[in-house]
View 1 (cartoon, rainbow, N blue to C red):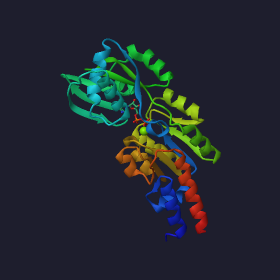
View 2: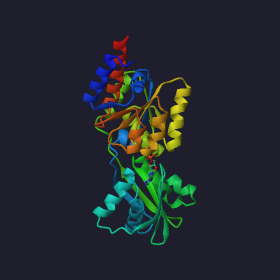
View 3: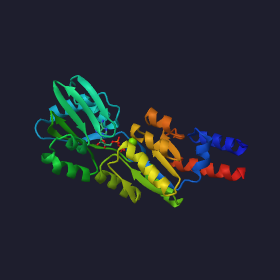
View 4: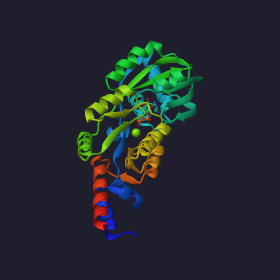
Length: 290
Ligand code: ADP
Ligand code: MG
């Protein structure tokens, strides 16, 4: 049955910019005890920009090749690298055989060379020696940057460090979440050092970093096996499996199409406080029906 209280609550939710796609999600939301939060695009604005480039040899060539490889990627890091190169007046060569490795990086063939751009681990896994860059990577990650490494024909060219702003309402939203008795968990594909800085700022004790998209869903299952009802909040392609696995999947409205399609609840105006708002509405609707 769809009692009047639920219909009314769905209307109130819509007024607050919350779209409830299923009645079931609405029912479950009030029982959630663990909230998993993606970092990039969820706790942060998701509009990173290039802060530092450290090249072993030619900085401009590194940027030119990286941007050319990233020009077919929709990832916010890719967009930032391309914009930075174009704003600097660089002409980008055409990329061939573009492959996107979700949550890892990209591969493309440019000017006859195999260009690899992505998280440092991706490059080392593929046999690139990053030893000359180890110190740079650690220093930049400690400063809170997301570090992307670049290689041509298996030889390291250097790194690009990007920064992203915390959403202005993130501190407030997390404080309320904790005050309500919910357990926040940060789940990100980004590196542990950058993740720890964000978690510290927001008072999140449980941090899972360097996580692949399938692993995000496995972490949801881990909490479910422990008996918790789990909400997952995310925005990216890499969050889609976890959004589907969660008891309640919540997508930021500004997120990718696949995240929005995989979610039960959509936060239209990208305001993190609305996540708690949706839960409160769900609770009061179900109280009213009893
Ligand atoms: P998050 O979980 O924080 O939203 P992602 O899973 O999308 O992050 O990405 C995880 C990491 O993989 C990034 O921090 C970056 O190092 C790397 N990465 C993913 N996509 C790209 C890309 N297109 N270019 C470069 N690096 C990428
Ligand atoms: Mg994200």
